[in-house]
Image 1: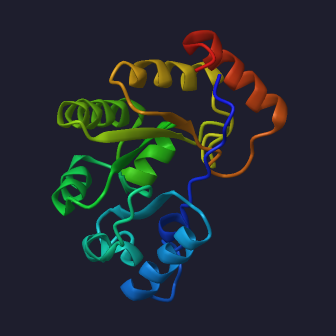
Image 2: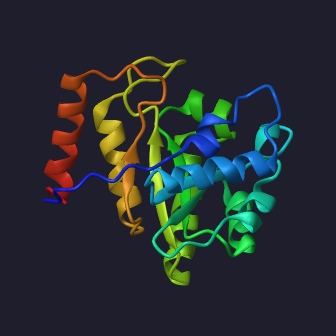
Image 3: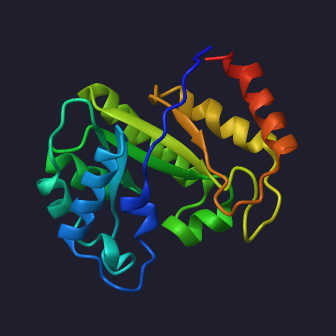
Length: 201
């Protein structure tokens, strides 16, 4: 079992995407540079989504173009579909793709226009392509601990999603407490179920 913890800085994407005031590309690069100076070595720098949906991420390609290339820093970009994945690859500047698969149909439709099954299908295709290219890709299961629309998300559904995604060889599968409703007993239970399937690794 791994005895280290890796902190991934996501503020250049998650921290800025809902800001009402437009943050310039230069300010985003400064934020990323400061994160590196603070010691972060894995940073989610942007998301490749439609600019009309998330205007703050409209400069994704330009952010990638201006990223300082530092040997031990891994840059990740978030994608919600194959179109976003193709945009990410075209930059030739990011080391890793981050995917999101919803654990509830309603959240998935509202957040990325696809239900759970469609999200799994999309992710499997991207993961398969990334593996063939030798490109790192990880996937996060959204609303794994509770959905703002459907409420409680069955733990077995999350485990089933993880089991299917694992077949495509992502570098990691993450569980997102998207709305902050998870409690310690729930976390222990869900990770216990996952360890029973996948082992301690």
